[in-house]
Image (cartoon, rainbow, N blue to C red; front, top):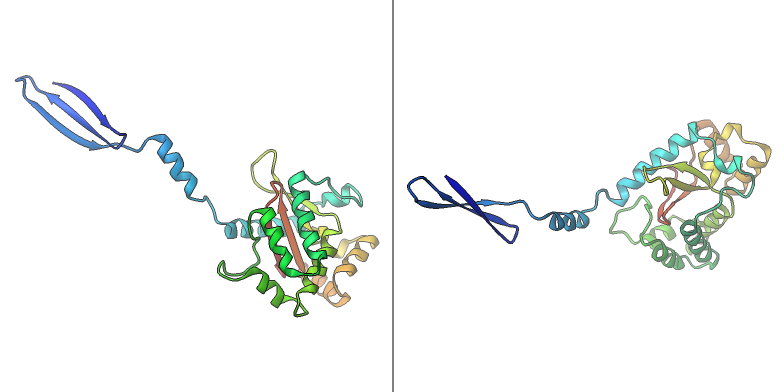
Amino acid sequence: MSEVDFTGGGRQTRTLRIDRNGRKTQQQRRQAPPRAVWKRHQQLVPSASLTTMARTLLLVVAAGALVYVSRAHAEGVRGPKLPDHVADVRDAILTAARSGDINELQSAFEVSGNIPDLGISPRSDPIKVLKDRSADPQGRDTLAAIVEMLDMPPSTLPFGNDIENNLIYVWPYLSTRQLDKLTPSEQVDLYRLVTPELAAEMRKKKRWLWWRLVISADGTWTLFRKGT
């Protein structure tokens, strides 16, 4: 018996069988899609949602507060040199915050290419939520917090397996430090951000309760949440 295969467009295969008596039969069987088609399909399906990634980042940042020595402290007041992508997004966020108009944060979202994890439903209006969370109705208290954070150096934490982009940049750097072991100058930075009462509460609970902002090495504004 001999066989001859006929492939039809990479979808199914017809097999022509010839037995010893010269009789011919055909069978059809499904064939896996071509590799190129499968690759395109994979590109359309995200490997993980931004929310899942942000939750993982929270775990990394929280763990870093206990076991990772802040590179910002090691490298001095200036902190680590920011990659161009990170610096561009930071500048866009700062420009929006200093404008005094919380709606300008939309332009920072556009520079980043996404809306960061704010701890809200994907259907919620991020600008409205940030405005509602602010101590004032215009959202300027939140903008002031952003300016104070980004005027300080970030800390850097390892995240992911990408050799060239395996760091995340976390503001303020204090959010990854052990608050009961701050230097005098670091304590001054802490009081620039929070009240003495909140600082005492965070020391007691041994965790960061104020705002935290994260930008990944590729320039993605990944996280902006409070009390995580």
